[in-house]
Length: 94
Image (cartoon, rainbow, N blue to C red):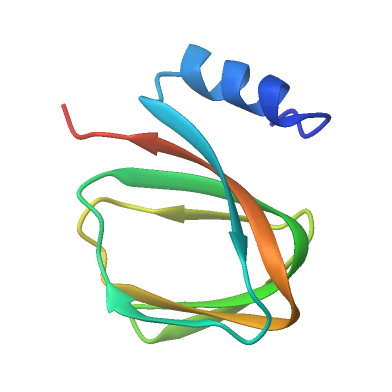
């Protein structure tokens, strides 16, 4: 996964079959309650830290860490004292 720029990340994600790529930014201490998405998500944390909880497991993610969420997987998120940023490639089920 090319992290040199968002444009490089997006180009690589689209070439690999993603439907869209986004860069997300979250405020310090923000909490996102349990939810699910209708798409697969493959992401990489680019700044800060976050905790991703799904299927009873909590992962503490920092810059450089990656995550995968299959479509329909319930999960919740919380962000650290400096917030967090990540890039994510979305792929709709085919």
